Amino acid sequence: MSDAIKTDVLIIGAGPCGLFAAFELGLLDMKAHFVDILDKVGGQCAELYPEKPIYDIPGIPQVSGQGLTDALMEQIKPFHPTFHLGEMVEKVEKIGDPAFRLTTDAGKVFECKVVVIAAGGGSFQPKRPPVPGIEAYEGASVHYSVRKMEQFRDKEILIVGGGDSALDWTLNLHPLAKRITLLHRRDEFRAAPHSVEQMRALVASGKMDLRLGQVTALSGADGKLAGATIKGNDNSVTEIVCDTMLPFFGLTMKLGPVANWGIALENNLVPVETSAFETNVPGVFAIGDINTYPGKIKLILCGFHEGALMAQKAHRYVYPEKRLVFQYTTSSSSLQKKLGVN
Image (cartoon, rainbow, N blue to C red; front, side, top):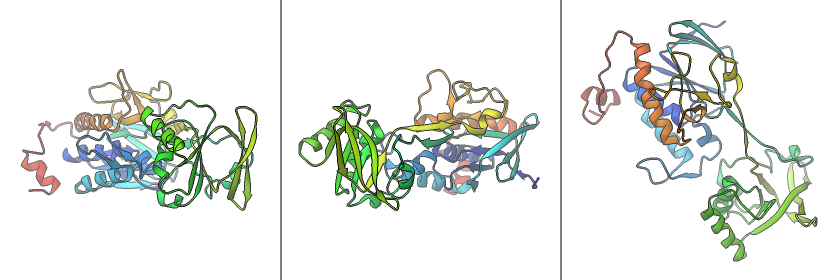
């Protein structure tokens, strides 16, 4: 076993909620380390939709997933959090009251007073369409997420799906692509009505194609897609030309080792109480999409609120002898000093 890295708080998951939690903890003089299975910070925002606009962050009318991540990283700079990326916490042991020892799959060991689970829904894996031989094209011309829109410029793109992701990327990539075909098994969509209206307007004006049916085969060589066979709802079989395919069949959320940590679970989510979002294990908190409680809404802004309340309770564990006096960053010279703004 390697020497333990000691910290006040270990945050599992470096998505937006985890990053903002480090800010709230830092204001209260608590040092945080992060462990994240991804190779970069930002969670779903950076992994699944780095260039997709987000419209419901308070005070920011529009920001991309990567833009929000960058802003949060800038905000927590004064507190110098440490990131351990590309690792997964496999084991959590209780060694005090509270005190924890956590071990990652890379053999790294942490000891801390507080654990914050901010792992979203766990690890996200795209659902693979049941198309024979699709594996040969994955990563080259079949993609399950859009990380850089520019790579799709002048492509003949087949987008498959009927939810928000499929419609959003149809609309966002349309100005870049040579041609877009949207394929869904029926003429009803689960996406936002406004997005569906925009898509239908493009179809009506001849600027893109809408097909009903499903992909039954792909053609091409050496990972380079050349076309797809589509079986229509009327059992017709047609070939379409495409050099890129974006299947959006949803994501499978795998909770992973969290299920083995002795924390109560409810439908693969972590139940918490709502005064501080603490789990059934004292000193272990869960914020963001991974937690559940009556009235829970899966919004980033809600996760920010959860992180703020979590930090207040965490302070009791890290500094049991110290009285916590609530302060505002707008008026507290000590907080402003920590932030380097006075």
